[in-house]
Image (cartoon, rainbow, N blue to C red; front, side):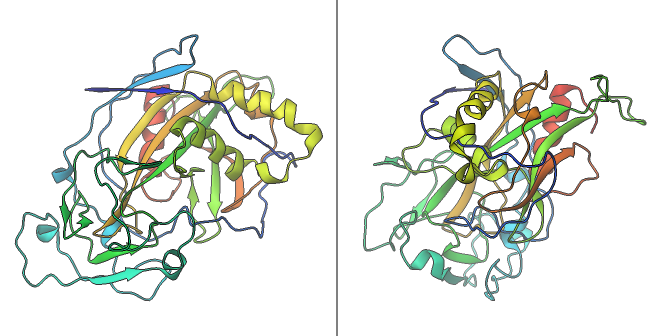
Length: 350
């Protein structure tokens, strides 16, 4: 059992935009870097025990989680036949050859780095050989440690801790090794006109709703989230990403900033709990670069903070709306599993 403590740092811009409540919107703006790419496959399998602990006057949240051994579930989406956003085919990797401990002389993956990364944007590392990153450590402002523990570095390149993917180099990912993201899961109770919780007709349990965005790059619904910037605390990333993805913080009127800042800060200073922390079976993963995330649930129990704010899509989102938490609703990657854990913790319908 591991206890993880995050000190909230509520510094930085939090801008929210108001439009008609709950309606989907299509926007033309694009993000600085791709936050999510889509690919068919099986959901990532993991096991978690989550326990919310009340925040203190110092605005901390403490969480407990239990992780299933990585050998129990070889990654699946990370071995999709065609690499997303390209015509590159992965080298086929059967389940029994995923683990690096399996000797496989015939393994010959293609080295592919997307032009969007190779063109050296500020968020991406240079090529190995032109710089000397400190792997398994905090390298300047870049955290190159993994939630999975120490990973192997071979011939100057880090190896994916969950094994072979059929593709080497970085693909669409900017960092060699772990690429850290944060996923804020914002929820509220579904209520009737009188403010009473609505129970599901079959399970008889109250229905949760969460803020979901529809990706512009693939059309799948997802939790609003994104990459942790260099030197940025995860707590700030969670708030920033929700603001930018679900409330279009970059287009807010100055006259509305103070009021909305107060509401959003109130929610993100509530007793959120960590749902998941670890490796993500993401279609962008390669042998040398992979996604890891921290997913935290912030629940508007009384419905008087972000629940009253109209939603507007921004950044990488094409649409945004409150969606009922239900096992039948398809979501990107392992996001359905995150919501299943939230529903279980909140004693809500799933």
